[in-house]
Length: 348
View 1 (spheres, rainbow, N blue to C red):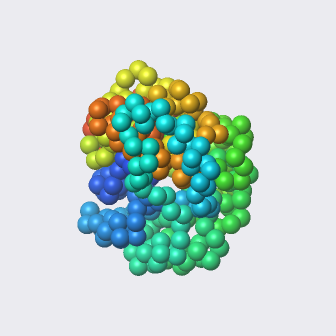
View 2: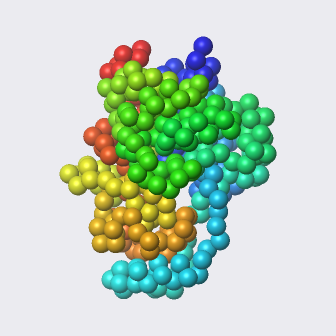
View 3: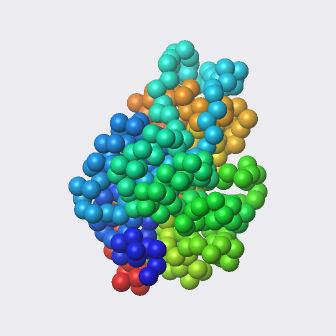
């Protein structure tokens, strides 16, 4: 029996955890439809995560995937912060934002002992990590709950590192994928490949189940990934417009127009490369820039500007995360999307 069948999944489809555009409702709908629903936890406080973990079982027995970041958190650098605010000064003036305004952007906490304690209490079926794996003592606590550990790799070297250090399955994140790149061994983006190139190389390099992620938005994509050796696929962009997502109206609108097909990797919104729809900030400052502070501190100074722009219907300063292929975005229930993919990929 495969790992995914053991988890109770009817179909080898995983909903990508997507902070800022989902809550427990999407995860519950996906799991209820026979796939694996995921909850992004990095931007949740301990109290918020506890509440979410209490809500998930209300939809049924699971399984669910709880996702965390594993970055090394640096202290804010006042020099970097001042440089970033100066770069944004003209935009502050345009939208009437006080340049001294207190920032209210949610933090992105790396996996810690409080998180491990909550996992020990609620025991989700899957725990996944982005940017590597947590410290060995924390990973041991996760393993002790009985959870399967999934982790993202953007290169073969990262996949092999994860296999040696305790992952139970590898998420092969291709360059097409929306949101933050999962790289952790090297910051060199030229090392990263497209999903259908990266996937078979990782399958050949590790003796673990491999999950294909990036650019897969329909049943044909699922079928192609499985034919190349994937044990499952992870899909995010295709869920952005579904009824259960909390994607904002501005973000949904951007996904439905022609320029929504133009995405790029940018570090402007968080300080770390992530793929999103090209908007004004990316065009005028350049998508990859030396101006923002290190991850995750860039979002703080942007928060009041983003709020002011969104208030007047302007998404030019908002992170519009999306993969390279937005053609699968549909305004449907998640269960309807999954049923269509299952039929098209002959998974039934």
